[in-house]
Length: 116
Length: 113
Image 1 (tube, rainbow over the protein chains, first blue to last red):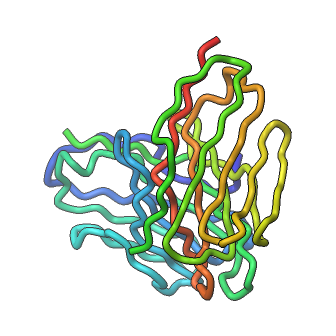
Image 2 (cartoon, rainbow over the protein chains, first blue to last red; image 1 turned 90 degrees about the vertical axis):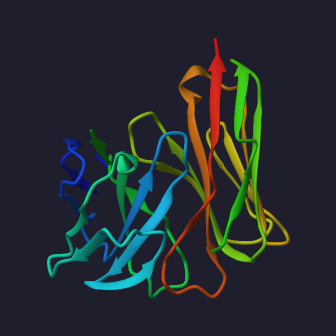
């Protein structure tokens, strides 16, 4: 158990639908990151939150949105789903970004989204 | 955006062989990290490097932070079947205070018994 909890583990839904993926970061971590990993693809950065505020955006589609709540858990909302959105979605957390050294991300075990 | 060039893309080796993979960037990094991802799981941190020239080991794994601060490599000695997985390099750019890491595209390692 990495300490980062993602739910649900698997999700199957139809095209056009909307889903919400949930992430609870490791205790004490203020930053949450979302990544998409398609088959045979690397980790595509979607978005970063730090202590409730959006800090960086990657290749996130307009149909996707995210937020981080006061208790630091985060949700990734995917709407108007297409077949190509089928992928593994990972959440990761890290300690405060204010320090110089980076101790790495701790990843959750992912949510496998299948759009049919 | 910043791209990390990781090579090779895949490796097929026999148990007992040594493995080497590397990662290069066009920008200077102040932190290099190596992750391993098992099938269906999230990446797990293997080694973290913080200084140019630093050489760090974790069991059969050894990683180095390049002198130019634009590259890093990972070696696995005497590979075993459980080394199978995808290995990712990741780095934090110099001057970044946002905490974002940039990832390579990964090296898929297959080990034949």
